[in-house]
Image (cartoon, rainbow, N blue to C red; front, side, top):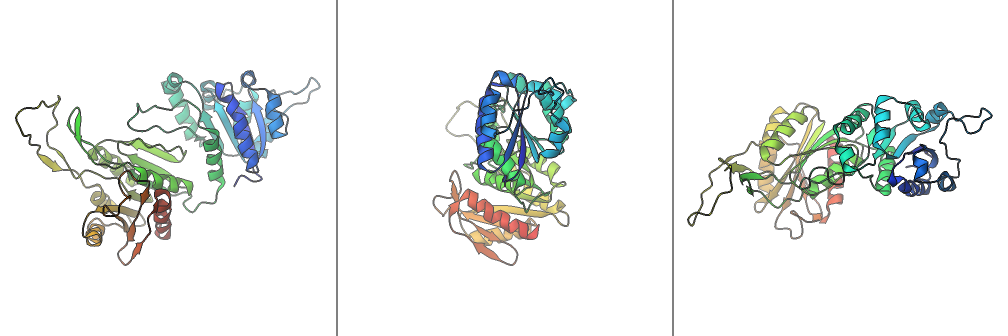
Amino acid sequence: MLKGKKIVLGITGSIAAYKSCLIIRELVKRGAEVQVVITPAGKEFITPITLSALTQKPVISEFFSQRDGTWHSHVALGLWADAMLIAPCTASTLGKMANGIADNMLITTYLSMKAPVFIAPAMDLDMYAHPTTQQNMERLKGFGNHIIEPQSGFLASGLEGKGRMEEPEKIVEALDLFFEEKDLQGKRIMITAGPTYEKIDPVRFIGNYSSGKMGFALAEECARRGADVTLIAGPVNVQCAMSNIHRIDVESCQQMYDAAMSSFSKMDAAILCAAVADFRPEEVADQKIKRVGQTMDIHLIPNPDIAASLGKTKRKGQVLVGFALETNDEQQNAQQKLEKKNLDFIVLNSLRNEGTCFKSDENQISIISRNSQKDFMKKPKSEVASDIIDELTKIL
């Protein structure tokens, strides 16, 4: 989808500047026309000659190219481009962009840009984690810019991989997907994914084997089709790196319930793919429980029912999709869940289908609505996600 697109590539003074060559090669390979604008600091890491050889265009760095009054028009560049990509983007440049400090050609071009702007931050973790940097990124998002950065898993520190620039192929893919024709453009979709952990004490919990792979595949499929996705993820070590996926990490059912109830009113649809614990310990010990005697009793109480609660608040025009993982009487149990929780359709899978469900890269599903059932063959979860979203688009 990048064929014939005009891309302004901004390069700043980061060690990751060498990766800009790979970005240019991939953009050109996909048929894009690339104009590089580089900061003075960026030239300390990569030479304009190298960049010019790849783009077949002179690299722009200064306002004036010669001493005869010839100058580069940042306004003209802003009108020429179909998109601007700043990769790598340092903390310094982020701050200048967020606060309108136009002291170089790159920033003035950004401020004049009429096309969408994509930003791939690149800095060390301490700089990335600093509140000023986070505030600047949030401000830039508020201005409508697209931030492209690696996503971390829940089991990491929460910042694992952050700060480093996303890989060139992922950056170019983000641009490619932006220009692709999308059937969910403008739609807001909430997805729950992964397990929940219900604490017994500081080191033990009640949980399940869900990997989150199905929910994340659904989130990426929706984002690929243009939706603005809110992904509420239980404790999983799965990553997604698309700028239109807003990830909320939770641990317990109660946390997932609170996040879902808070977000659902703003959504066009919700897909409840998480494997949520139905019960939790009534009491959670403050300290690790020691082994005393031969048995231990844990009294469990019900968790809030996320699907049923959302079904009660669902307004006209909203679509609610559920999942049913069954071990017996699959169709009957799924149909009852569909009716009881006011779902528009339900995705049924069974533990009796070997090589599917928990931890697997494949799944085999049936999609059940009030008046029909569609059965699908076993296939990769990415393809299963496409089947489910195809069904969603028919009623959304």
